[in-house]
Image (cartoon, rainbow over all chains, first blue to last red; front, side):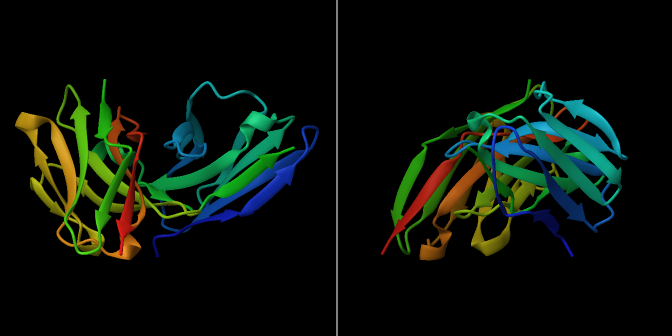
Length: 116
Length: 113
């Protein structure tokens, strides 16, 4: 079962709200990723977790806070976002060494976030 | 540093015609290269990948790509386009030891009846 599940599919939040995006995979993958995709643009890496530890943070503002509670789950906590943060947020997973060893990175369907 | 360049932000073909989507890479080491497809309002799905096992790579939905080191290219082709192939296509290269993906800017494929 090559599936990454993301919830919610759509989220509208105000600039003072606190919300979370959730991601789950049951492929036994030990690397998990958050990407951000603006309209008509390619996905851009935000965070990488490897064996439940944060290994890459691409200089993402602190209003985005990732969390990896266990090897199957990945959350993205959102607080005090700006309208320009509105985008599609994609979760992904892969075997531990990621695409650097030719492994496939599997993507979820994404969560559409609108900040008002 | 690894990077990919996709030539043509929009390609339009007739149904049944050849599909050719261009991707050139830049890498100081032998690269791992990927093609993903994104249908409207969906996530990304892997079409195929090059991992140095074979230069001609066959993927899903009748797509294939050929790795050409001399041309630093990894173009995606399909002999006969279907309406259902209309989507955004991204070429990507693996970056660094962590192996996350660096994407090209994407090519939107339109298929005319």
